[in-house]
Length: 244
Image (cartoon, rainbow, N blue to C red):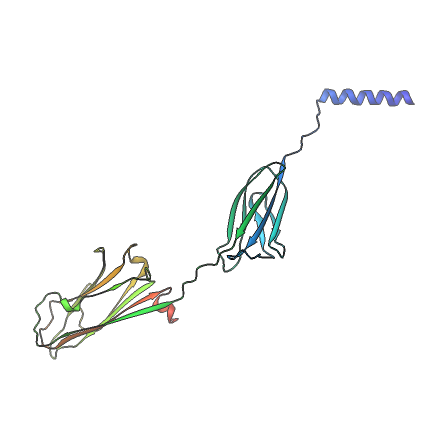
C-alpha cells in the first residue's frame, strides 16, 4: 500500500512538471481612503461615492469617510453627486501596498435669483418741427452692470398727430457697434422690443436704444417719447411673471 502511494506521488510530481504549472503571482493592489465635505469642510454622511472604472460604490460614514480596499494598481475616477450641488470628481493613481487619500468637496450650485431693473426715459420736444432724421434726444443707453441679462425688453409710446401719422423706427446696438435689433417697418403706435440675452455678444457692457423719424412722420410741435427699458436677470419676462 505504501508503495502504491509513493508511485502516485511521483507521477503527480512528474505530471505537474510536464505541464509547466507555476503558482500565479498576486495582482498588486492598493487602497483609497477619502472624505466628502461641504464648502466649510464639514463632513457629508450618507453620500454614495462611485469608483467608476470598477463599478464599485461606497456610502460615506457619519464623518464623511469612505474606503475602497484591494484596488488594482492604476488610474481611477471617483464621483459623488448631491442635489443642489455641482457634484465632485477626483482622479487618483493607486500604487501597490499604499493608501491614496482624497477629499471630495461638494460646492453649491450658484443660484441666480430672477431680478429686473427698469430705466424710464422721457424725451420732450417743445416748439420744434422735425425733419426725417434721427431723433437725437430719443437715444439712451444703459450699462449691463450685472452681466448679460436673460432678456431685455424695450417699450415706447409717443404722442400722435391729429389727422396724420407719427411713423418711427427703432434700433438697438451694443457698445461694440453690433446691431441687435432694427424694426423692419416704421410703426405708428406703441412698440415693444424683446432681445434674448443669448443674442447679446459676450463682452458687451452697454446697450443703446435709438429712435428714428420714419418717412411718414408728420412734423409737429410739443412732440414727446415715453419709454421704459427693462433688463431681466436670471429669468425672462414670461418666466419671471409665470406667463405662458
